[in-house]
Amino acid sequence: MNDLLDLTIAEARQGLDNGDFSAVEYTDAHLKEIEAANKALNAFLIVTDEKAQDMAKASDERLAKGEAGALEGIPIGVKDLFCTKGVRTTACSHILDGFEPPYESTVTTNLWEAGAIMLGKLNLDEFAMGSSNETSYYGNCVNPWRRDGDDTILVPGGSSGGSAAAVAANLCPAATATDTGGSIRQPAAFTGTVGLKPTYGRVSRWGVVAFASSLDQAGPITRTVEDAAIMLGVMASTDEKDTTSIDIPVPDYLEEMKGKLKGLKVGIPKEYRVDGMSDEIAALWDQGIEWYKDAGAKIEEVSLPHTKYALPAYYIVAPAEASSNLARYDGVKYGLRVEGDDIISMYENTRAEGFGAEVKRRILMGTYVLSAGYYDAYYLKAQKVRTCIKKDFDEAFKKVDVLLTPTTPSPAFAAGEISGDPLEMYLNDILTVTVNMAGLPGISVPAGMSSTGLPLGLQLIGKPFDEGTLLRAAQVIEDASGELPAPARWWS
Image (cartoon, rainbow, N blue to C red; front, side, top):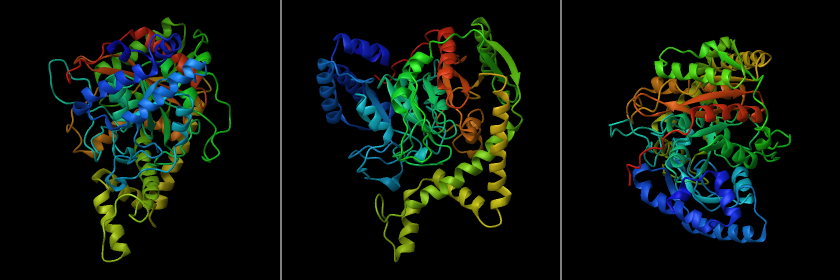
């Protein structure tokens, strides 16, 4: 039965269609693995056993009738930022304790309509604010990987740490995730998984708890590039309920992946060789360049001169939008309520107890940069920098088709290692935030192992709504790096 856990989505769909096993058997195998591993990993916050089994039975009926959807019988985990009707959704914040949405997010609706099965809700940094999954009200998620000969607990990255850890540990073949400044790609790099952040507007944000509305984008975390294409093909849609959703057809990403690589122009941004990048990350980047040369691609150095301003600009824009979005949590209509002497003190008491330290920090930063006297000096200037960043990419993409960079400046770090220093933690996003600021698609692909036995990822950045080329280029890294080892099952 454990062999079922190793299957990719593509392999599992083939096996289900062939009748090699049933959706019920496939789902039960994952439920048993979650039961065995989750106490150690804390990836799943809620396991929806009965719902999963009912959905699996319905999938088997559709398979028998020849009515299978694109994800028929595939059990997946859902980041606890996606509203799921009747199933608790908290964004891993105390302030949303007990909230059960009366509606389903567009993304999860698309998944269930395609035949996917919900295993449960996954851990994350509170309100997606974090790079290590250490700010969750429900406790840290643990990376299934460990350094060679070392039992130190490592972080899975964030904010989609639960999604990445669950896929890496074979608790599910795929999971939904969100990316505001790298929250799909960074945890994917830390866990040896594939993380795809689509173009802003390609996947609906309706029913996804908001952090920074102009930056947030949902996408998948999977084990292979092909599986990422399958997931995106289902998750993506035009949605009239989301005013930022783009009204263009969703292409066949699997078909688009089949195009030729010869002649593809790959750009190497010189500004991404940042201070503090480890030698092995730099060497992996150089190796990636050689892989593309061997595949027949053309390599060209490009300049993105405003990259050095991206991180400070991001940490003005994102908190500003967060301070506005999180104003709705006041203890009146849903979630936590802490009584006070009057309504104002009730607001204050609820927010003081309901929000964690990192969320409070970002609300305060955001409120400050939007306040009178500071709006022009900080927020307006950051938006101008954002425009410059987008123009840099526009110029680069006149010369090249995709950009190749590392995903993170280091492999996964230990829990507590840098969480006490917010600035050092924010630097984990240094190679990923530009993609969100410009609204571009990006993907992290496992590309090698560190000297301590941890996975390392390479990032590709694509043109707007050109995920097909991005996926095709990502396949080169996956093919060249070969099958990387799986984490040792130390939790069993």
